Length: 467
Image (cartoon, rainbow, N blue to C red; front, side, top):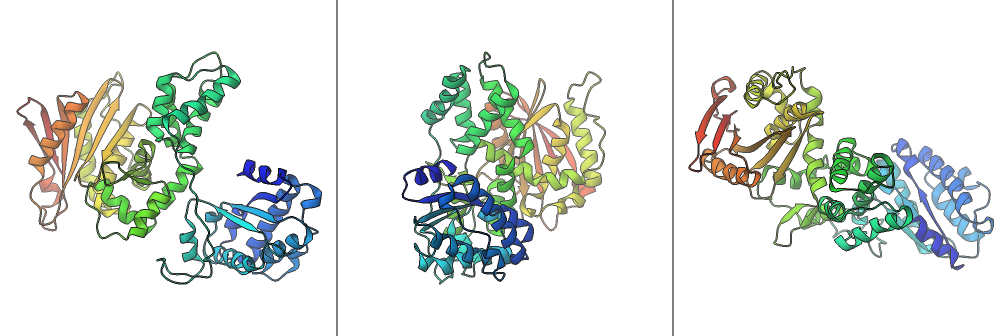
């Protein structure tokens, strides 16, 4: 957007600039203070990015009454220069509550007076569609009612790159520095990101600026995979913003059944479009809603384990051998002890009640792999399960999670069949099947917590864990 604003200004036909309202987010319940903070940064930004003849006059608008300062500033600036103003407002979704309402209504109030007395065009940049700012500015949460902010011409989302464009982007780095991205590295980056622009750039940035600074060393698939783990663990601003969305009720209503492998309920079309607009989900070519890319697929459940992980007691790593290897039998014994003592209390530590057992189990397993392994997940609408693959050095363990729900039959038989298929894909001959009994008449934890070893027709050894 900075480049676009500069390009428009360079035509000599517009005064275009990108400004931010993020500093106002510290004052979401004090619009007056937010206006002063926002305008202070706007003056500095405009002074830095536009020539003197296109800059506003002295800071007179700050003398205006609270609730009118931004409109007054934009009006005075528009009247002071001879070119129409194009204003890109970044981080608009960092504002909330009364401050967001105030800013939107001032923009709406000044809009009819353009271009002589107000910016000719205003672009709001954030993770949400303008339809959602409409809610904040006083309209309905559906699109069939009037709103003080109903002036949207169009909403534009930067589309994802295709595989060829990812390769072309990385080739630009090669041309500038001589450092090569192997074809496998480029293909892996596309597979992990599905071309999501921020992720494509973030992976490469992590690799070339921190991991492999020596330009004579080629970037490999392994470098990209390592960068993925770093990004997920670090949860940079972009990923953290998506994580925040998981608390929103209409997003939870979609993501929770997806993680549980259930069918979506009666979800309004607007809400489905909302998660697509956010980039959280996409429509699968073969039909059905799915998480947008493998990195998001990993981030979403991992974020939900943060609170349960913080609630975990100190657990001695009894699952490790003296040589630091993972002992599967020791891990099972440690889990049973953990679940017996702490399982049920921790189920209340997450707002995603449908998958509370999954989240607590994943929190425990993250404690296991911390620093020495990885935990991968697979889930999809209608699959009625979540699959986990725990990797720790040379040990790999396939795990399937099933829930015995009210008025449903015991899912063990179906789970064994599904897990056997999953183990075949992993090339394993053993695995764990968890059956979490969530029925109202379920036996007490002490009585139902048990294990049973089942040998399948294909001679795979499955440990069934009832919890």
